[in-house]
Length: 611
Image (cartoon, rainbow, N blue to C red):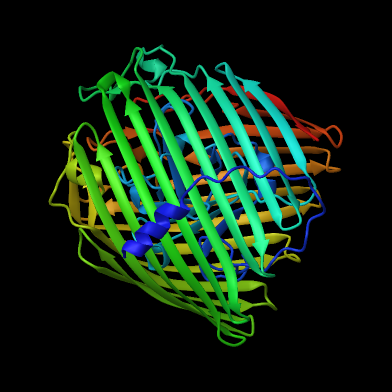
């Protein structure tokens, strides 16, 4: 095991950026993609509940941060505490805890070891090629923290001739954003690099309607890179890195009714995050592909006012084998080693390591029947070993344009460092969460595939779910359930006009106390109408609705809300593109968590210059 640790630390280093003149793009090699399913299967075929947000969709929507595009997806609820960047942002999938959604950036698991979740408030859309959302328990392939699902964010790969872009956007709350990108390929090398800076005066984290007026500003500097080299016909090695530095003002929490937050003066927090991975892929035989991926994530959060620091480090080595055993059968077999470290100032530290052994078989009969079965044994240095398993099946009826899906899966999540030892509220006697999930789904294509419908029902049973009590102390809920329906429709109305509707109904309850779990609204709906004119003018409008929900452990709730946004882009010529977007166009006044502010009507405009 010492060899594995040494290999991980030696390979997780920052490579120098690649400077190269561009030539025409070579034919891409057939390699194992870094995806949430660990395979390179097509989106139409998997038995899993999978959403892929493409680069084209990212450009059309013009969202500044990843959290905003996630709000519009099936099975996802996003909760932000205040203005851009400076406020924690949590994602709840299918009623699971925010710490139960595994987030990966280029194959690196980036969840914070102290809190368990990933704070999306600092993640910009910089240099992102696509986002994969795999809903439902994924512990069989990814271990702990994947009870609700997996969100995998993938950086752009350099292709073709050298290309550079300069972009600028400015708008409400004295917000300014500048970005530079460069990408391309030469012979066997390719690269994609971006850097951006965001500054905003923001608004008060504590809701201004409650009498708080002090603005909470924010600064974000992000650098992203993806460097690749193809070798020995079908081999490839890459370096993927992302660095995020932020400074933000914030308002303090209050435990005195009626206000859950109080206005802060000159209170700031700073953060530094590094995410690196070095995946190496190669075919050992025409039926055997291998991938070695070494990853490192580091998050540091500092509160100078309170002389408090939080540090999270994760080292991961994953060795994966994909075997093609004939035309219909394939197998994934792999081993993962992970070492984690957490530090909560001034003197609390925690170390843990785990090994995961996973096996999954895929059977594809005549592109009609798809079966998947897998299991994983997790060996943990602090908690009992865990065995998880999953079974999935799909039936594709091509003549009718119908696909039927069914799955059963188990999952688990260990308590976080904050759950066990935080000086602000903890419980060292917590047990790991365990879950069972059943889901069935149907997808139907109509009118020559111009209309695509999908419907999924899921039911999840939790044992020992970790939840806060009325004194903000984490406790194991004896039994909890989450059931719901995910429905979507995509309609190509005309050649250049399409509409998308996503609706999620979710009922997540503590079955012992007979109460609704915190921050799990029953209904979320997103409707987008998109139009493209001659590949010059691209426009869309989106309505986003969320029903009321319980906001805190005291039982206080926030009402429902519906917001309207619009985005437009105009391609002047090969070099210049103009962009504009409006947020909360109906100027809806609402709170996400109780007491925290949200932006009223706001607008932003900018340009992109390519050369």
